[in-house]
Each structure stands twice: as C-alpha cells, then as structure tokens.
Image (cartoon, rainbow, N blue to C red; front, top):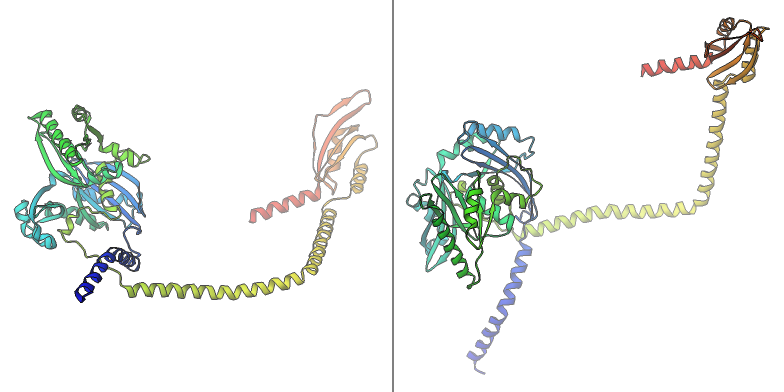
Length: 513
C-alpha cells in the first residue's frame, strides 16, 4: 500500500472514532468543570412584583433543585384607581417584607403591556456574535426610545434564509427607575425587570407544560395578545373591537393552520390563555366557538400549578414573573441588562483539584481522631468485660443498700411526723368527762373523728382545744339530745397540733419561693 493510501486509511479511521471520542471528552469536561454554583442545584428565592393599571401584586417563592414552590401571592388595589405610585409600592412591599418572609430574596418587576413596546425585527445573520451591539445601535429605529432613555432586552427567536428573527422589548427608563429607586431606599433591590408577556409564557409553560400557545386580552377598544413559540412571543396582534369576533376567529384559524403545517398535517390544537384580570366570561364564550381550541384563564393556570395557594387577591402576572426568573436555566428577559449577557465563567481544573484535596484532607483530619478513639474504646470495653461479674455484684449490693436506706429513712420520717396512737387515745380519755363515752373513734394521719354521747357536748370543744395535741376542733353535725339516755349525741372532728404547725411552715416556705 502506498503512503497516500496509508494516510487515507488512518484519516478514515480517525473520522470513525471522532464521534464517540468527542462524546467521551464532553462528558469528562462536564465532570471536571462542574461548578457547585450551577443553576441546576443552586437554591434561589425570588419575589415577583407585578404592576397593573389599578393594582399591583406580590408573589414569593423559591426553587430547590428543579422544584419551584410559591409560599405567598397577594394583590393590592390602588387607592387612586390608576397605576400605583412608586412610594405606595415601595411602602407596601417594605411592610410585607416581614410577614411574607422574603428577606434578601431577588426581586423581579413585571411591567404592564402599555408601558412597553414589543417588536419582532429581522437582522442579518452576521450580527449573531455581536447581537447586543447591533441591537443597541438599532434600538432607536425599532423602538420609540434612544439607547440612553430605554431599558430593553432581546431574544433571538430563530434563523432562516440568512436572517435572524429577533424579539425586542423596551420601556422608558424614566418611567421605571422611580419604582426601582423607591424600593432601593427601603432596602429592596430589584435585580430584573420583565413584562407581562413573557411572564404569561412562564406561567402557562409551568402549569400545562406547553410552550406554543396564544394569549388574548379584551381591551376597551381592541382584542390584544400574542402568539408564543418555544416560550417567547413570535407575533403580536391587536384586533380592533369594530372588526369584532370574526376577525379574532380568522386569526385563530390561521394559527391552527400553521400548527397543522408544522405537525405534518396532523389535526391542530390551539391552546389559548385569557390574561384579562376582569370578567373573562364573554371573551371565553367567543373563543369557544372555534373548534380545536383549549381555553384556560390565567387564574386557572395558577390554580393548576399551585392548588393550595390562597386565591385571595393574588395576580397571575406576579406568579408568572416569579416563575420566569426562578426556574433552572431560565431564559427570561431582563430589561435592566440592556441586552448584555454576563459571561459564564468556567471553573478551572486547578480549583477543582484543590477542592478535592481540601475535602480529602478534611476527611483524613476527621477520621484520624475517630480511629484513635475507636481503639481506646475497644480497650476499655475489653477491661469492662473482664470486670463484668465483679461490677454486677457491686451494683447489686449498691441497689440493696439503697433500698434498705430508703426504708429506714421512711420509717424514721414517719415516726418523727406522726404522734403515737396510744398517746392520742390516752389524751382523748383524759379530756372526756366521766358522763361521756365514745361510740366511734377514727384516727388518720392528719385528723381525728369522734362520735359519742355526753351530758353536755358543748363542754367538750374547749377541753380538746386546750390540748397540746389537737387543733381546729369543730362539730361535724348538729348536737342531738337523746332523752332516753339523757345525753347529747355529738360528732367532733379535729386535727393534730403538730400537723397544723408543719402545714403552716410549708405554706410559709412556698410563699418565700
């Protein structure tokens, strides 16, 4: 085989190995350069703040891995009946900062459609690498604003025939900055500014997992909305109310035909989200006339995504704004960026090696003391096993000694506190007159009860009261005169004098405590 033939064979072999080798290299690169701050695993907490013509709303949520949870969503009506002032919004958000528990969360502001201009323009494909510069130079041509006076951002929708289709959204800076500055004075930093258009796309995509749909809003003079493809507006429409529902239905027919064309002739299904915050019943009925449409309101989308979320005054735009910028790998617009995308810095291999070395050193530093302690513990366990029988005997003796000691202490305490029963009976016998006798005697730990007969029962009380053993002598029943025996029947109850003193001492100690 000639030299050119050999080189050709080697080249062909290299081409066959190129694909699997490239895949392997890509996998190795992703593993080595994986960052702990990767958006996929990083925890994020975002506050969505949406402005409307007569209200504003707040939604608070967080992302943990790929799960997005919304904890609060509240709406606030403007007292003036028009757009809320920057001071009103800033004061309300500042007051809700504690109750809603959003702390230092990233704040995203969603602007209503009247405040923004949306255009889809074509540019030469050659500007793709420097799209930000090209949009900045052309911003005064495609929008009513100059680059200095505008907040704007763009999204490349697609490329066809050497042309780029670019979505550009812009707003007047002097209209938005007062809100951002008022919030900043309250310690709340707005990190991104978006629009209701892209917020609606994020809400619909999260609730129904669809990226191609239409939003329709019935205004005072026109039906307004946008068609979305891949989660971004691909065309904006405004149909005059004078043309009525027929023009709107024709637009829907064209969209269904386009979807059938994109799906190789399969029957089209057009998803429509009604974004009006007012009464949407009439608009929904008009849209239902057209076959092949699936209609859902913005509020229903919120309920599907978060059924446990309170319905009291929440606004879908705030929830959509939050979802647009909290989702992993989000591609949402940020008008504050003015089209400039931050460069993603790839972690260095050396940093990765150092992290691994630090982790290894930490494991060794943690494991070494544990190993030594484990050896000491093993030696101590061996000694304990050797002395196990002796320890058991000692513990048994200790328990027996403790039981006997407790019994002796109980007996001694009982003897000290209680007056002997014989002394009590002797004292009662001494105090009773000769014409008195007992029918019942009951002695408890704290009191004595007497039943019997006496010539005069009332004379008994002073006799027992004067005793050193008794106190609180009292009759427990009415004295009854027995004529047959010519004596009073009595029932007397009294306490031990020592128990009385002890109770009084206990009460004094409790009061001091």
